[in-house]
Image 1 (cartoon, rainbow, N blue to C red):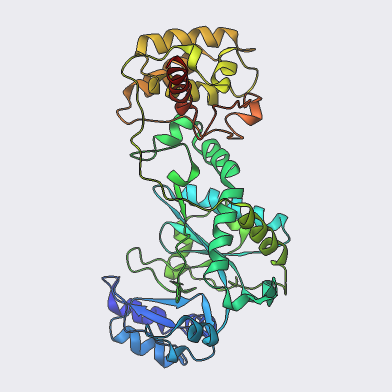
Image 2: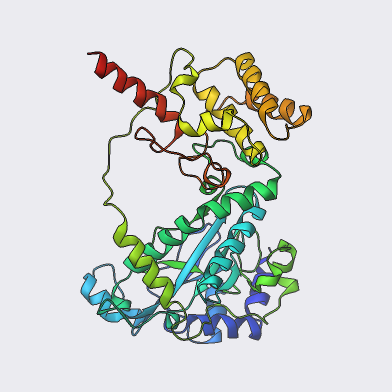
Length: 415
């Protein structure tokens, strides 16, 4: 975008009004064309401040999620207690980025919005300007105190817990929506270069790395790579969102960002803290090499879920075709043996899959040079919803691990 067009955009009184409104009580930092930030801390107080920074090379504006009593007193040399005393409050931002397709970020934003809606929260939505969306909950939606401690002093602890909780709660539903959007598991997996596990977060990111003075792109700021506006939008406009509506020449400022009713996120916060309290403490273990058999593993060592799938299904046949193909490949079965076993399984289904579906899916799987894994244990979409999740004492994170655990136990018994 030409410099004069950038200056013209930021000189628009409507744009200046919206940016200054968002800047109130926040640290605001300009970024240059190469993405580097200007010196921190900084603030925006007047319209001329915006124009002067643009004249000095600023292309985009970022602000803190935290609100401060004296933002210009911030320093990297401050102790945590001093930072806490300067902090007035903080907003909560759910930062969603698609790894490949914007449609995946749209699906994620819709799932998160509806999850929050069920908890009585009307979150606001903003296009990031590139490949994702920000869903915001303003500070006044949270209680001033929780567990007899001031909420504002529990930063970044609280937003980290909220992000973890929401990510975990929507995981199954989000994967289902992504599969539906792409028309099948194989089609979804094919949108990215590599997949380490069948998780929605292989296709979209929800940021969890919250820290002191965390920044986000301001509403109505430009993105210097795509020259699109970081535009607040209504939920009803999300499903059919097109980047064209975020072009500067199509600017509309009829939607607000970070506006909530007093206390409406209290239930969310309580649920998230209760969930966190029940989580086992994370123990960092040395990374283990994924086990792989040198010879085909026979069915007698398969986990209950795979054995139940192989008996035939009335529901979830396409999903289970993916599970079987990935599982049998991980068990070092030859392609011809996989095809034979899947065809035998298909005849046991209440309504067999079409020949075309079998051929297409197997052809796709056999072309894969990457190691695809079936969904992790207790996946509602792949196991629980079709009635095959019947774990025994050997079941753990992924069905692929099951045979190795059984064989290891048998080996010990023989000794």
